[in-house]
Each structure stands twice: as structure tokens, then as C-alpha cells.
Amino acid sequence: MYEAAPCVACTAFRKLGDARGIAWGLLGLGDVAREQGAFAQAAACYDESLALFRDKGDRSGVAMVQSNVGNMALDQGNSELAAKWYAACRHYSEVQND
Image (tube, rainbow, N blue to C red; front, side, top):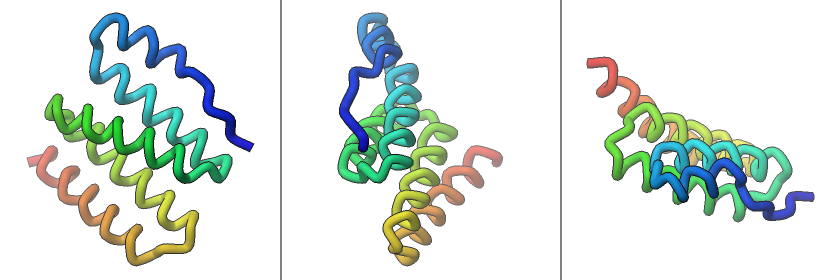
């Protein structure tokens, strides 16, 4: 079962003031939590990661988080919510490639 552990990379990135590094670390931590079925913890990591990516204008990061949140919705049997997250991800991906 998932146990909250400090994200060493996130701690280091916080000390450096590297918001993108923190966001990527949180994304990875969210993935670990999701894979272990700790959906509330995964959602918290994804939420913070998404906010940081949006704040930095990192469209690739935003799209990655949205895709992973869609995956989490599927893991929980919610295909309708997953479709909404995938559509948002697709939008960011298309805008990025313009």
C-alpha cells in the first residue's frame, strides 16, 4: 500500500526554486500513488503539478498531467471523466504543435 514519502527530487527543486522540477517530481510521485491505488494522494500530487505547469506556461507538462489524470479516472472505472481529461490533453497537445 502507498505510504506518503518525501519526494527527494521535489525537496531539492523546492530549495532551488525550480517550479518545473517540482512539477515533474510531483507528476512522478502521483504516478506511483496511482499505480498503488492511492487515488486521493495521486490526485493531490497531480493537482499541484498541474497548477505549477500552468503557472509556468508549460503546455507539455499540462498535457502530461491531464493524460495521467484521465488514466486515473479509467483506473477507477470512470470512462466519462477520463474522456473529458483526454479531450483537454488533446487540446493542449494540438495548441502546442501549432
